[in-house]
Each structure stands twice: as structure tokens, then as C-alpha cells.
Image (cartoon, rainbow, N blue to C red; front, side, top):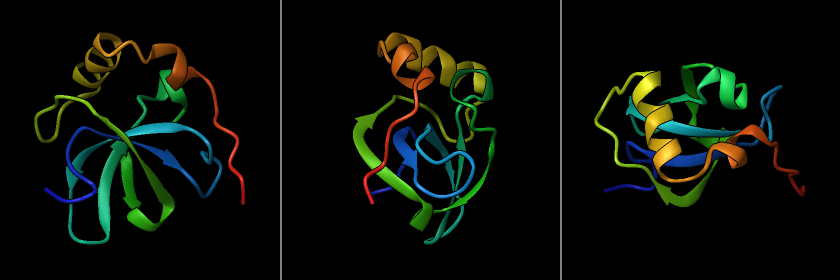
Length: 93
């Protein structure tokens, strides 16, 4: 188990989605993962992301590899994180 595993909740730190929460849904290699918000919750669409642009949080959702957005949203709802995903986090640089 690495730092970025399937189901890990992260904060995007770079780009237009900076400060938004997302979930890792697939590992590509050592430097890249596939993340999703889902878009209607946090504004992060499903895309490949460099791990240097993510800040991992302690929360890990019970997801299977390459889970669809509906499964991710259901896991977020079961964890009680819907409101947290709808708000942006202010990043201190």
C-alpha cells in the first residue's frame, strides 16, 4: 500500500481546481493517478493527475479499482463527506 491508493481522498493543490477535494480511482504509475470529484460535487472531473499536484488526506474510501462516479459518490455519502466535498479548502503556501 502506497501513499496514493484507490479510494484515497486528496486535495488538488495546483490549477483551476486547487483547493477542491477529489478521490483517487486508479493508479497509473509512480507519478500519475486518475482522480474524480465527481464533477457535480467538487468540480473535479475524472482525469489523470500528477501526484505532485495532490495533497493526500487521511481518509480512504472503500472503492474498487476504476470505480465509476456513481460508486464514488455513494462512498462519499456513506462516509458523510458530501458537504466537505462541496466546499473549497483554502491552501496556505
